[in-house]
Length: 138
Image (tube, rainbow, N blue to C red; front, side, top):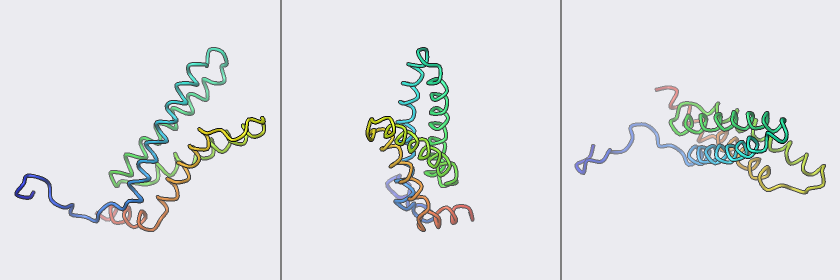
């Protein structure tokens, strides 16, 4: 503690901006997935299949939240990597289905794909890997 009562600098290496941005991307993914899940559950009485998609989106929401918290705490990048990879595949499938149906590129799947790929790329960068390796050694 410093004389002002505020905590001093951290004892370990400082979190790289790559990790911070990946955590923010994970929280943003989780928020968007949660909104999609709510919409899916809202319209599931009309089409039962939407209820299954709602469960999938809620599961991905939980994975992204868990991963983002894990990343920001410096524990592990694996949960966010896995959740973002699955989110990216689901978003890519949504884009392909939208294009095949003649609807063009939909904004939400494109945004989810961008966030998912961004989180994965940021976590696979050397500064992120080195930071997690240093945290594992403690």
